Image 1 (cartoon, one colour):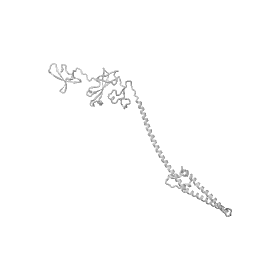
Image 2 (cartoon, one colour):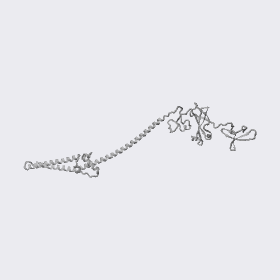
Image 3 (spheres, rainbow, N blue to C red):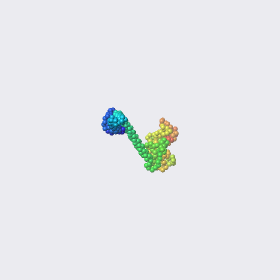
Length: 360
């Protein structure tokens, strides 16, 4: 650095240590010059001192020459011109020596301190610039580390996302657990098929039924029973099933399950109408049955024996009860009323009715 070149390594280090301990301390320039000064300042001082020594030597020689010329002149061996030249030489070397001494004095008093302070100021400014650069570099390093951590975290998230997507893509291959006919999960449910159909490119959610493989050995029918009749339908009741595709074939089955709660309202259905999903199992295996077929179901609610079936037109309200009017055969003008149980579209007389009576 310039300060070290100016003062030398030892002196510059000592000066820097003093300024570091006390930045406001006064610098003793005389002590710097006299204490192992090195560098360009030492060379400049030596050059100025050598110039003084040279000028002093020339002056002393000129004085000797002038004295010798004066003696020769007094003895008429030298001319006045030679004496004048010798005197001028003395004056010239005298001026040269005084100029060298003054130049050395000015360097010690002004130029050396000025250059030293300037180089010291440049050193301090360079040091501050180094500190600023270090702080800036440290800030940039911290930012780079933060960006590195952020990028690494983002990379990890993207890698995890890629792994998850690869796992999801692998899971998109659905393998059937057994052989059979694959159908859409909404094929058997018209409302689901209409409201949430399964289509190519459609999104699916967790728990959604996409495909099913029905067991052709155990087939069944799903129907909806109106709330006015649901209490008459019980599990285990026998049923007759007729598939619309084969109306001449009657299949036998039984009620498997009746939903405990009504179905939620669908589309344009009256929300006040309550229906209950009921499952009917079909006895045996039938190759003609395919999933999604429409069928008609007749459930045997109750089997009555020894009863009389009459048209609904002969039933009337009598004292708050549904009754049929009876006329005994022996008494032509005697009319009696008998309570009956109603079904649709006929009325069934009570099983306690006696054959000797007939309905009017």
